[in-house]
Image 1 (cartoon, protein in one colour):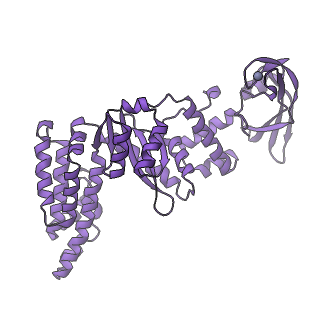
Image 2 (image 1 turned 180 degrees about the vertical axis):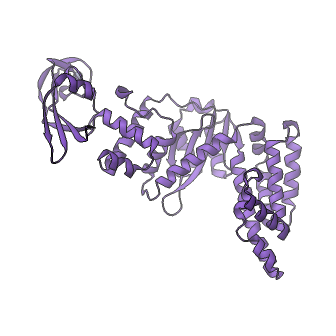
Image 3 (image 1 turned 60 degrees about the vertical axis):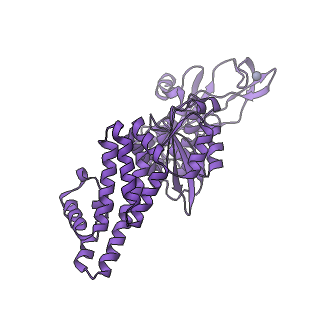
Length: 412
Ligand SMILES: [Zn+2]
């Protein structure tokens, strides 16, 4: 029995199973373990020390066996080190101060990756939501400890709203790999710069070649100061968001104009067209196509703003680099001289960030990575809706988007 328990649990010599009990009513199995050695390394310095005594009995939840919820109990040996005195040894099959074996934590982590609903994983594993969060948090802490120092060549920063009210966090990511480096609370210039300097070493920040940011002044100031040698690029993803917003405004303005002109048919044609207008022509359904055509016919305001968006898409996708500057200049002139206020605003915004937008195009940093990371973070925020603390957002983002090695070393 002892031999097979070692094999089943993966807890082997010098640990030895010395007893087991089954509670059929509770469907619980308790396995008693002891340390079968004469000495052990001091957990502080590693020096092999004689035993002093044993700790009171502790209990860890292990993976269920044949539907029996399984626990391991053990009185851990305490060593007496000449330098550090009496210390309880850290078993290699459980995390320090943890209530679960590493094998158990490892399975929880793997389930969380597949099924992102934390409450679902808690129920399936027979533990509380809090325990799932504790396991996630220690997985992230472990992952951050073994992660090499971040040295992004392409650093991206992005603000995300979180919680209730107007709270913002700044997400720093590696623009080439699409993984989150870390998240800080706040988005003003000073917080961003100081936060970044804590996350990435100053020498590494000096080696950053490209910073992709949105068009906010605070990010520009912070990243300019923190990464003195980097080219600051305003990426396509953020420019597109402003165009998309302008299309929404144009549609509202169109409705107002048609209402004022008493054109009921026109107003009707603009109803419910926002998604059709914002979608790329390639991804529009037949129904979207109809709505889109009707909206374009009904309102010149809508059509003008949409066409400007389309031309900007051409800038990113089709314009050769050598023509990019004059192409963008023409676009800016047309947009900033428009008599549609929302389009003029985007025109001026692009004008005041001209070089950074042009650099984003010339550097040809793929937008797909930024977009895919954004949707992953969005998913985490949806799951995390209702989190009260920034801290929960941070470790959830790092758990799912940090590209960290989350599994305990011993279980890999
Ligand atoms: Zn010691």
